[in-house]
Length: 529
Image (cartoon, rainbow, N blue to C red; front, top):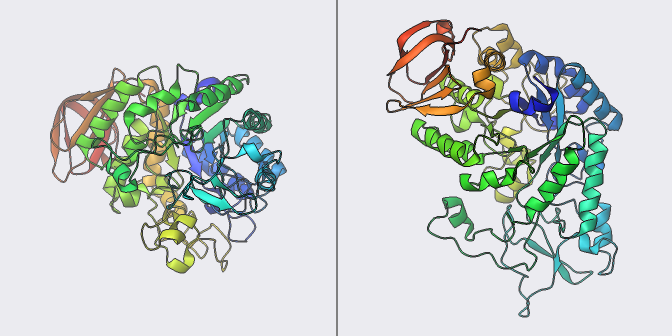
C-alpha cells in the first residue's frame, strides 16, 4: 500500500499505554513496554498504533488533563523513548498516531496557572471566563459531561471558568488566535518527530458559542441520551466555527510528506452530523462513527445504520469504525455477553466494513470487561457516580499476555494499577491455538489486505432473511452474518468461503447456497487469493 493511503487500507490498533505492558515492574504500562510488544503487533498485521495520551498530566482524568503538550508523562518514559518507539514501529512498517487534547488543558498547565492569577494575565483570554448572571446564578445552563454544572467559580478573580468535563480540565478559548497558534506549534513538534497523525479528542466540541447562550430543552426527535441530559448541547458542542479550526489543521498536516492524518473523536450520535467533519475533503480524513458502537447487536439495526452512513458519508469520504474503546464497555461484554461465537461475528463485521477499522487492545483475544470494586477505582467518572454508572475502569484493565501471576503484563507479585482480569484468556495460549479468536482476527486482517474488495471495495447491502446481515464488498466478495439464534440459508452465494467464524469451513466451495448456524459469519469470494 502507498504510504499516503495507509490510513485507508490498513488497520489501526488502539493502545491504552497504562495497561499494555509494564517494562519496569511498577505496575503501570509504559512506552518501553509498547516497544517490547511491537513484534506481536507486527505478527498480528497491524498498520498503525494509536496511543491514548502520553503527555505530562496530573492524571485527574488519566492523561486527558494535559499539563505539558510537548513532553512525555514520566511514568511512561521520556521523549527519547517516544522517539525510539516511533523509529522501532517504522522499522516494522507501522505508524504511530498520538492522542491530542485541544478542548481543554489541565488546571495545572502553566497557561491556566497564569490565567487565574489575575483578570489582566497574559493567558487570561486563553480560557473561557464569564461573570455570574445579575441574579448571582451561573453564567448559563451548560452541563459537564461528567455531571453537574460546567462552571466553577474562581474566588481569586471573581469569575467562573468553563469546563465541559472535570473542574481540573478548564476549556480553552478557541476564539483566541494565540491558542490556535500555540496548537499549530504543538502539532509541528510531534509531526517533526515522525508521528503519523493525531486522534483529536472532542474534535466536534472545541469551539463554544461566543455569546454563551443557554442550551435549549430536548425535542421529540432527540435520542434518549439527550432527554436524560435535559438539554440539547447545541451551544457548547458542534458549533459551525469548529470547521474553520479543522481546515486549518488539515492544511498544516498536508504540508508534510506523506501528509499526516487527523482522526476525529466526533462523538455525535446522529449519522447526519458525521459527514460535516470531512468538509470538502479539507477537514478530517477520518471521523469516528459512534452510532455503530452504540447500536444494538442486531442484524436489522446494524444493516440499516451502515446503509444510512454510506449514503450520508458518501463514497468520496472514508468511514472509520470501532466496536470498543477506552470509554466504552468492551465488545465481548457489551455485544457478545461472553459468547465466543458472537464476539467473532462482531470482529468480522468490524474488519469487513468499507472504511478503516480501529481494534482496541485485547479485543483480538475476546478480552471482556473486568469487574472493579469501589476501592480499586481509578477513573474520576467512576468515583463520582459509584455505583452507577459503572465508570470506565472495567474496559481499561491490563492486557493478559499469559496465564501466570502478573499475566505477563507486570512482574509476579506486583500490584498493577488496575486489577488484571481472567488471565485464562490470554495472548500466549491463543497464539498456540490455530482455532483461537486471536488467529481468527490475524487471518482476517491478512485476508483483508489480500482482497482488494475488502480494503477498498464499495459496500452494498444485499437481501437477507430475518436475523441475517449480508453485504457485497466490491464486485466479488460477500460478507454474511447470522446474528440470531436460528439457522439461516442464503442463496446466490457462489465461489469460496474464504474465512468463517467456524474455522472448519474455511475453503469450502459454494454452489449458490450458504447455510449459517446461529451466530455464524463468513466471508465468501469469487476472487482467488
